Length: 169
Image (cartoon, rainbow, N blue to C red; front, side, top):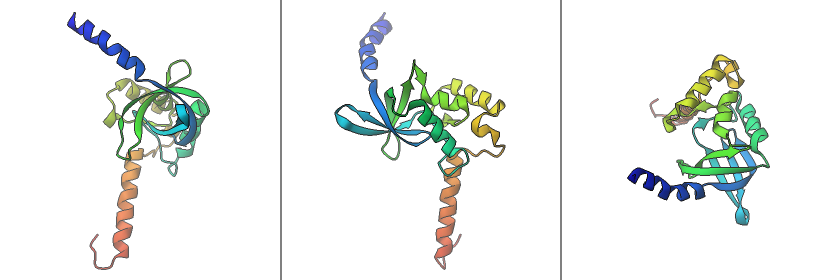
């Protein structure tokens, strides 16, 4: 009975934690900009998905997919946390209850970001997209965005060290 009472007390909080906004910008496959009431812009990093970077194979395709789904449309979102860049990480919903991160993964334009998600259904969606060779899974050498970013940092560090005589690699 106490659990039911607690759930009923929390329900209004859950109901009001969703925000409605219009999508006015797409930075990449997993980052959008929305317009809130009062003409306030907010950048949102999509929760539970990591799309290829724009300079990675399929990066532009992921951006286009996200744009085709939500650009200039009303969405609802629930903020889950902030990322290390200060962006709000959010679960974004559109249409008749579609979860944007899941749609991206199902279409093969993003990886399930399992380090920041407990939703194993997203992992199953990724496996299905991979088996069907959808989107980025057409590339046999597809590299996850987190590994791509790590390689970019390592290469930048290596290049910097090469420019500084006397420093060891």
